[in-house]
Structures are given as structure tokens and as C-alpha cells.
Image (cartoon, rainbow, N blue to C red; front, top):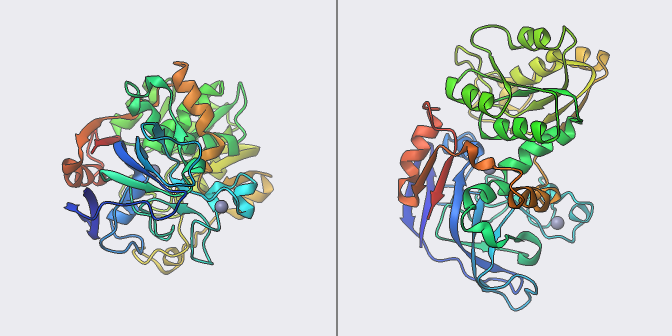
Length: 379
Ligand SMILES: [Zn+2]
Ligand SMILES: [Zn+2]
């Protein structure tokens, strides 16, 4: 089959690789019909992780089941399914508590919990930017899609990662009807966080970014765009909230946060959140942070450490939730919102391309070229 292979920093190619096959009775094989390039793929693309050369990238899969192992009970050949980016066993002590983001079985590394397709440090699973994908523990990991799935693939595929991830940040931030919410980052996940805050009836949603296309998109869904290249985002949020700060904050940028001059600061968005969220406000941090970052510019960041404004955070009595999203906690309900016509997350899609154009798409997306918001691939 054809698959998008990571060869090294900023070097990916579409290459012929052996087809995946059923390796365990609980596996399913899925022919991928829609899959995305994610902002977190760029950390690997840029060589800012210890991703091994030769692996298939991609962790946002949707497709048709073409074969199932002998122990698969519920998923059938012909089903259209969407898989959480988290690979999870369903029976370990973390999965049992719904923490499929920290499955201890899907990741053989004793120091790290949580599995994902085509992801550095998250287990041996091959990626989904390919014609076929092996899905382990298929009954647990496949979310079956309703009959309208064919026409709405670009909506349903967002349920693999960015829609639940954005939603999760609003849950960790405790967004309730009438709240004011600031979202740092207007990339795909930030857009989904803003969209989720609106779905959860927030009164005011602000999106901080500096790319005009992203700010325009945020405005289109009903958020207030905050351009941090024009003035301090903290001041702008305080202005919008009568000087109090937002009730809730979402971090959707991560460790590669840049200032408007292009300098990277691991702590930039975290400290801005502490300043722009009100006393006793809550925050949900879903942007990626890593324990080691060999590509970082300074010693502290290389160890994944940040100069966090803990004194202000503590004295304001704020709370912060962190980590990757347990997609299975939300994917069924978000699927049903799409099915009911009440959510249309495909508004983030800017490009729909065949798999063989993926290497060029990575280049454009990595350069944050205007208009390259979210790339959907059709293998
Ligand atoms: Zn993703
Ligand atoms: Zn597990």
C-alpha cells in the first residue's frame, strides 16, 4: 500500500510499504477513506521529537472495515468507522476509569502511558496517513458511523482528534452557559475549542492568534478575534471582560508557542493564560508539551521545563487541567451532534487532497502559509 513515511526532519514521502494485516484476533483492518494532517504531526515533521525514520505518520483515521480478526464481535466488514487517535486496550486500570489517553497496555514503554497511531513515544502503532490501518482492540477503538457518514466524512473525521480535543479543553476549563472564555491559539484545535465553548453556550469567546485567516475563521463562528501582534493579548482580554479576566481559559498552542517576532517561548501561552483568566478561573491545556525537547533553544526548554508564573497562578486560586484528550469520553456524543446537524466541525477544512500530495501539504502547513488551516487527505 501507499503511506506517508517520516524519513527525517522536514522530509516525508509517499512510499510503498507492506500492507498491514491482522496480527491479533481482536484486530480490524480499515481502508482509510479520510484522514487528516494534524498540528501535532508538525512536531514530528520538524524533528522536534524522537520519531524513528521509516514510520508511517497520521493519527486521525476514518474508513471502511475490510477485515476483522476472529475475536472481533461487534465491528463488521463494511462498517464505516472513525478511530480515536488514542490507541487503548479498554481493560487496563486507566482505561477502566475512562482514561484511554493513558492506557498502560497500548504503550510498551513503562515510563509513558498512552498509545497513538503514528506518533513519537506513543507505542508501536503505524500511522493513518496510508491506504490501510491496523486497528487493535477493534471493538473498543472503532466508533461506528451512521448512514449519512459518506456525505459527512469531513465532519466525522474531526471526531478522531481535534473536535474532542478542543471540547476537552473547555471541559477542563469548566465552561458553563454564560461564561467568558479565552482560547490561546487559532489553529484547528483552537478553532474547535472556541466552537465547543459556543456549543456549550458561553456568552463570550475570544480567540488569540495573529494569522489573519485564523482570526477571520474564529470570527465567522462567532468568536471575538484577538490579534496578539497588535497589542498585548492579556490587555485585550481584560478590556473585553471589564478588567476581571475571562472565566475560563483554553491553551491550544503548546511548547512551540511563538511571540509575534517569531521567538519560541515554552511558557508564553501558559503565563498569558494565568494573567488573562480571572481569580479562581479554570484552564484546560491541550496544546502539546513534552518532557524532553532536544530541538529547544535553551537548557530549560530542552528539559521540557518552563518558567511558569506559579506565584500569580496560586494567589489567584486558579485551576489547570492538562494532558491529551481521552477521545472515547466524547466521540460518541460529538458524532451524534454531527448526525443531528447541530455541529459541523468541517468548517476548519481548507484543503482536501489525495495522499500523494501530502508531502507538499506538510510543507505549506508547516510554514503556516495563509489559508492552510486544516488538510484532509483522501487516500
Ligand atoms: Zn491530531
Ligand atoms: Zn488500557
